[in-house]
Length: 165
Image 1: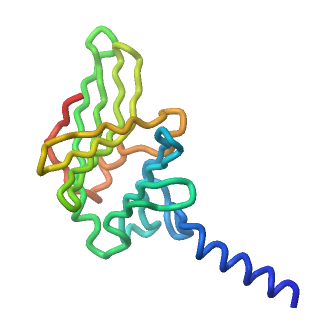
Image 2 (image 1 turned 120 degrees about the horizontal axis):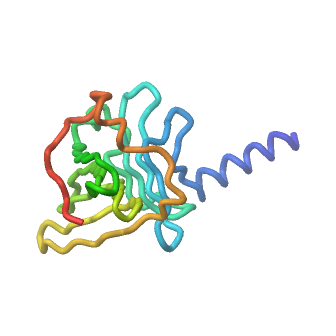
């Protein structure tokens, strides 16, 4: 009886107070932490049934797009630019995944600049009505996963839009 009570208490507390960024059937494509303890997660079902973007605090998912719907892959676009040659050629590797939701454009980015040996990760949110953009920089030390795999895996449409730094 005591074990049943413990299991019930854990179930209630997890459903009432905790929303998880990663479900058991999912894997991380890209995740990182931003200032204020917020987290960004781009995840996919392990069998490629859906892709989902999640943003929020440790205890609460504040935005999930588009959820776990069947046609979620069609709602995202990936674009990139790659220039080799090391520092002498100012090599760079720019990667963007973007989508539009409720009048806002969201652009996840993962970039590398050889000249400064600098990596950056984050998300830019543009209000399409006012054209104002907020750049939410991520902590590269907390980054897990990569957007680069979208170049070859055929899961997303490839766009040609590059976003200014």
